[in-house]
Image 1 (cartoon, rainbow, N blue to C red):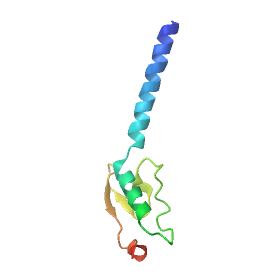
Image 2: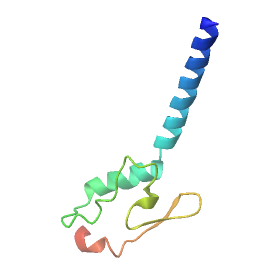
Image 3: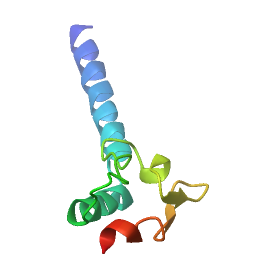
Image 4: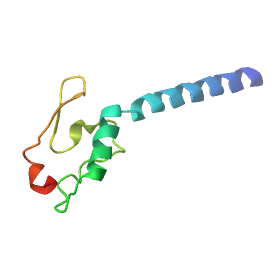
Length: 83
């Protein structure tokens, strides 16, 4: 029984780690956040761009489709600090 409990616990931990990896890996968010680091943002327009969120769909100036993929970044709102 003790060996079965350890095996079950190890399996559960492995599944949780796999889910956490899937949930935390968002290439679109990583790319946008990396770009944010390069841009000048003196007015802190992009402060909502938080890389710890599951995806960038809740960030200001970002629009996503129904499967949480980025479909648009509102460039007009960004031009004032990119220049």
